[in-house]
Image 1 (cartoon, rainbow, N blue to C red):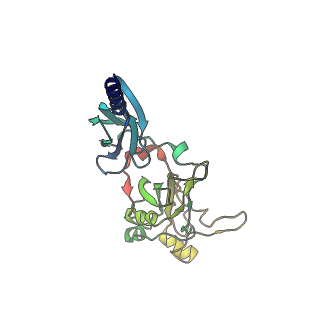
Image 2: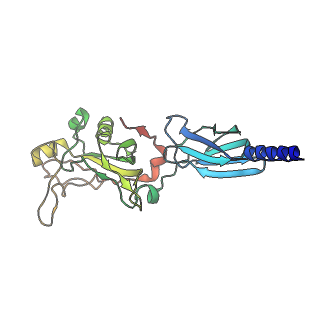
Length: 271
């Protein structure tokens, strides 16, 4: 009788151990750039139907505790989806790849405005950015509007253009934002967090700066009363012709950042 009792206990313990959950983890990357896909939907289905749904974090990672078994996993981001199968009988891994640019959604409320937004540490607003030869020779007055992905350490991880400046200035814009450092954004509890930042770079007319400001390396100063930037009288592009007596008929770029087409632009890793 005692032997039978002992055997029953051993079998019970073995069954209980077999039913203990195991961890399934993985990472979802963009199939073209290899950049982590944040916010991808991960749906895990087992023998009894849908077991779990979760979203990837800022590094594209997910993790789930599952009972032993075979699972089908579907990864979804916008209109892009992929799937895979995995056997979980201990710690298991299944990665996914998606086209993150198909149907990407830019969520301004959550991504652009954390409770404490990032603050630039090494940015000098009165310093003009470098010019390309084409921008100088064309006497261009232009802007770049960019979306920056700033990590929890205040480093610019990647960027995308919301508006390209033209005149061979894209590489200069990329170098300028890659050099930026920030005080990181913080959540409601004060913990550093990753955030997106809309960033603009302006190149005033090189001729205008040299003749009316005295240098090409400084932005138009703010002076007068009421205080306003010295180029306040320069008309915006598309606003109509200059007065015939103008000393220099240039038009400034008065454009504002526009996120509506952000999903169509590719992320570029900062260097």
